[in-house]
Image 1 (cartoon, rainbow, N blue to C red):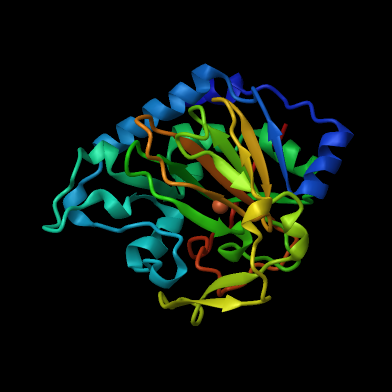
Image 2: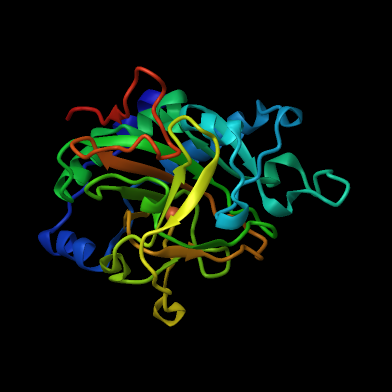
Length: 295
Ligand code: FE2
């Protein structure tokens, strides 16, 4: 299955006006980039990974709420693993799962792109490296990946944030590739963002208290309140790619509908930029972030 995925990805035609639009607005929607078959292959591989997960061993919860962001060893080690994070609303007061395990996971990350053969074949395809080069990256590297479920009924809200808050480089270089594995609609929690909002620069930085520490803090770089009235919805059909500048402010609301909204995201950094030791996400000792395949 892994080999078939890489072969199934066609090269992306992108016009200069789309490139300009990306730089001006901070995001770009490319529909019909990934075939239905490849989306289904990613989804079914994720089902297999879920089936192998032993929930008794760990109960990490994912939240972007910065005051309660759950940082622990499991989270830190997820940089180089296939790790599972529960929805905040997954457990009842007694600590038991309210619904089946496969409907209780918020996301899986952050090393799918090199730890799992199927996700690796998809994520490191030359197609994405070429696209990132066209968007200005000199040496694109895949730094992290996550499969996001946005579960029906309990898929939690993700607050307005900029991805570079969690993945900082000097100068700024982060680009997110957000793939709709299923339709993302107004009802099931599609992305929303503020066009041109990236031009305000980065507002906050999430960093370790010191290199190798698992203690973290949120540092304010710039005082600014996002104007919620400027948010636009970015609903996209299955197979679409939403390209996000690392400083593009975006969010998604809770999914109170009856259908899931699976998405897969890869975050790339430019290897020519300085990568701080204080970023929570660090490559394994002696390794570096993985390059995309050559053409
Ligand atoms: Fe994000």
